[in-house]
Every structure is written in C-alpha cells, then in structure tokens.
Length: 226
Length: 73
Picture (cartoon, rainbow over the protein chains, first blue to last red):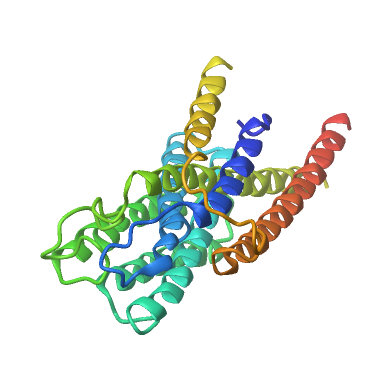
C-alpha cells in the first residue's frame, strides 16, 4: 500500500470532486433553516468518519504490537493515532464554526460536542503518556494498551451517550436515525458527494500517516547507524 | 490489480452519471459570478486543496529519496 501510488491519485480526484460538485449539487431545503450550510455535511461529517477509521487502524496496529513488539507496528499505531486526532480537531473546529451560525453559539455544551471533546482529550493523553516514558519497550507496550482503551472510549463518548439525551445533533433522544448522518436529511444526490468525500479524506489521512511512518522509520534507522 | 480497476471504475461511473444534474443558464453574467458567486469559493477551496496536495507530493518525494539513499549504503 505504501509503495503504490494509485490511491494517492484517487484521493486527489475524490477530493477535487467533493470540493467542486459539493458546491454545485442540488441540496434539499428541509425546513429551510439550514439553507446552503447543509453542504457542510460534505466537509464536517467526513472528518469524523475519517477520524474513526484512522483510529481503528491505529488500534489494530497496537494489538499487533502487543502480539509482535516490532518498531514498525509501534510507528504505524502512533502515526495513525496522530493523524486521526488532527482530523478530530478539524472536526471540532469545523463543527464550532457551523454551530455558531446554526445553533447560535460555537459551543453550546451539546452532548455530542462534549463527548467529542472528551474523546480528543483521551487521545491527547496517549501522546502525553508516550512522551513521559523513555524506555522504548515500555513506551511501546504501555501506550499500545492505552491506545486500545482509548479507542473503546470512542463508543460511549461519540455513539452511546449523545443518543441517550437531548442533542442538537441529529439522532438524539426523541429523534430517530444515526447521530452521524440522519437518513432524512441526506437525499440520494447528497450521498453521491458524501461517500466519495469520506473515501477521499480517508485516503488522504492514510497518505499523511504513511509519510509519518516512513519518516519515523528512517529516523530510527539513522539513529541506530550513528 | 483487477480489484483496484473495478474500484476506480465504480467510483468514476458514479461521478459521470450525476454531472447531468443541475444545469442553469449562466450566459449573462458568466459562470464565476452566477449563483451568488459560489464558484469563487469553489475556486478558493480548490486552490487550497491543490496546494496542499502539491506540498504532500513534494514531502513524499523527499522521503522516497532518503529511503533510496539509505538502502544504497
């Protein structure tokens, strides 16, 4: 995957498509409160989808590290986690911008906003934990265990708790559907932009992560040679 | 390889089929000034996207060169 480049081109094509057709596609008016800002579905929501995919990959590499403690597995886990967190922060910021004009304030303590912020803090603790350990072996093992825990904290913070209470996001108590995408809000034409967008952003995240991985493996090699 | 081609063809075919939607008359003011100048925003976003990708490609190339130098030693 790292050496081939067709998926990098695919990522570019999909994102150019998202950023052109995403502005052009006819969007549903619903009750007309969203107006054109409904197009944020193509940009804000894929951030979270991509974050979850990248963090899932990171967790898989942490499990692999515990089974086979190689430097490569550790590098993969860290790189995917940090790219995932970057996407999460972008998701929070884009959400705040959207919320400012849709809900009246950038942060209204919505359960999903709070949950996402907590999830990000849990992941930031992962990097603090790594930074505080000097021994490579210990750092790898402890942070791998923590990373697996952190991934499973995404379930309550992003998916379960926001559904149990009133939420401004789609899918809170009293509303039906998925809190990520509400089936009623997205019509067929929006889906033709939304899913390519998710794939495009995910491939871009994988690309950035592989650059980080290759850099850290090179740095390690150089460190060992000197 | 075949899987990859199928994947790309599937995605491209989805895109081509929908270009047929949403056509409007833009002959008077030109494309960039139509629809509340939304295409100006599109141009800005595209510029950012292309710039970021160009930057990524250049980093990718630099790392590839370092990897090749490392394997030659």
